[in-house]
Amino acid sequence: MDQVPKIASHVCGICPVAHLLAGIEAMEASIGCTIPEDARILRLIMQSANRLNSHALHSLMILPDLYIPGTETKINPFSPEEPFRMVARRIQRLREIGQEITQIASGMYTNVTHRARAKMLELAKEAVPLTRDHAEFMIALLRDFQRREIVRVGDAEVALRARLGYHSLGYMATDPVYGTSSLDATPGWDLSRCREATPLHLYSGAGEITSGSCPIRSAEPRQRARS
Image (cartoon, rainbow, N blue to C red; front, side):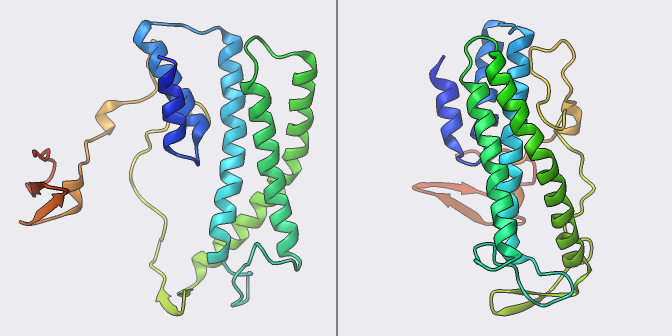
């Protein structure tokens, strides 16, 4: 049982904490294990800190696609010039804070010590103004991008679709940070809002998809592929 969380956390290198906790909860649910409230709070802290690190990393990854508002200059977060250097250093500091809090919270086999709690609180207080400044900065960049009709992708100019990034689909998330477990008496998810999607949903009409030496013939949408 202890191997499942380890394997799950290594499947994706971007969100190991979320997958680690999902693997742990799956094993707990299989034996009907109920954890103490202190352990639940530690997990909430871990996931919140991981979310901070993950969002900062996502910002770093998309910045080269965005423009300095009001100009045609793309943003290079690795430039030594300002304001790029300041932004990159802020992102890296937010990631460091998230990683350090995660490390402290995940290393506790019992409840946190007063020293550990004080350290996490100190880091969290440092992160608050940095996070607000960075959120305002990213919102300004994304709004500027959203107003453009043409954007550069590599050496090509591409027309920007109206309402890019918007959708009318529901969300599976049951909480902004942590969510509910299958052990909860009233889980927060509604399976009636979900539907199965297989690789065949990406294709329409007759055709053949091959996977190694095993051919799969396309079928009507929502029909499971049979090898």
